Image (cartoon, rainbow, N blue to C red; front, side, top):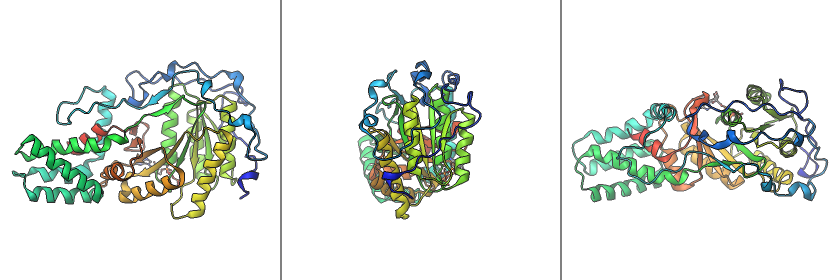
Amino acid sequence: MPPAGQAPAAPVTQSAPLPTPSATTLPPPAPPAASGGLGWLRNPFAAKPPAPATKAAPVAAPPPAELPVPAPVSTPVSPMVAAAPIAVAVPPLPLAPMATEPPPTPAERKGWLDRLKAGLRKTGSSIATVFTGTQIDDALYEELEEALLMADTGVKATQHLLEDLKRRVKDSKTTDPAAVKGLLADALADLLRPLEKALVIGEHQPTVIMVAGVNGAGKTTSIGKLTKHLASEGASVLLAAADTFRAAAREQLGVWADRNTVEIVSQEGGDPAAVSFDAVTAGKARGKDVVLVDTAGRLPTQLHLMEELKKIRRVVTKADATAPHEVLLVIDGNTGQNALAQVRSFDDALQLTGLVVTKLDGTAKGGVLAAIAQERPIPVYFIGVGEKLEDLETFNAREFAQALLT
Ligand SMILES: Nc1nc2c(ncn2[C@@H]2O[C@H](COP(=O)(O)OP(=O)(O)OP(=O)(O)O)[C@@H](O)[C@H]2O)c(=O)[nH]1
């Protein structure tokens, strides 16, 4: 692999079929999502005028013959923003107690809540059985401690929740174990709330999002879903297949690109940093709204591969001094405490800005979100409860706590 300063230019390919063979015509914006759609699409993105075709560059991205790139490339691009930034998330909810009636939700959000609830059943049921007795005593708290630990909540978050719960029980003077479950949901929602944050698109053009994670965590699937949602809202997206190692990964991303008529920068067996550089450069030249960089899966213990990730990050910054604007880690919710270890390692290496937690469907380890909130509170932008498009949604602390404990 050549050093960063001599990264070869990656040939830029477009996913076929595109409306024209060149990038001079951007794909027509997909129709806006149905009104009242997913919560994170409640934003004015569709109102944004499509990017002007005149900004588009030739298909081949400017080759990074020598890195670092000259000064003009590193000019901050925020003044180019045509529309107000959009927050790709539901607004934070007020700190109302969980036990009260939640605010009405649109039908779609309700459907999502049902799926989330079903997905978290395995984690929630063992915790819920703790509250089926008749007394609030030490035995209840001991059982709860065990159930929380079994759900991979971790020692610190479990201790925090128990202390917080005991205080709430004392304050409320309740004697009903069933009511304690509601108080636990309140405590959990408060613990998780710092993880709620909106993914903002539109402050930069393009918004460059780098995505990392261990093998099979759900990176490519999540990127595909995110692309679909963004494209449906009229955002122009460019995908960078920086997993140059695994052909199937490139193909998988290519399928998502085709489905959404978005462009893809891809190269077989090349330098992932060079592909990322080309994609960001092309994204800037073509006035794209979002560049999503899919990286190959790797374990935090594979130090050379972690170095490769750091290099991708550095080289992306050379293509755009303000980028990457988001560095996301995709974690598999089934892996529990191991996912927390991944968060720590990838954060140390890459300074993560957000998480996507997948496969919360059917996991008995959903407590890991509490562990993350307690020990490495990095925002959770999205959670996934299945392989379908609608199974990826924004994270909401109250919804999560409610789904887990009702
Ligand atoms: N049940 C379930 N499966 C999921 C979810 N998200 C992704 N998957 C599945 O997990 C598998 C791996 O997903 P990928 O997107 O290929 O994972 P990746 O991280 O890109 O994998 P590598 O490229 O090997 O690193 C696929 O079969 C997905 O359909 C989810 O939320 N729930």
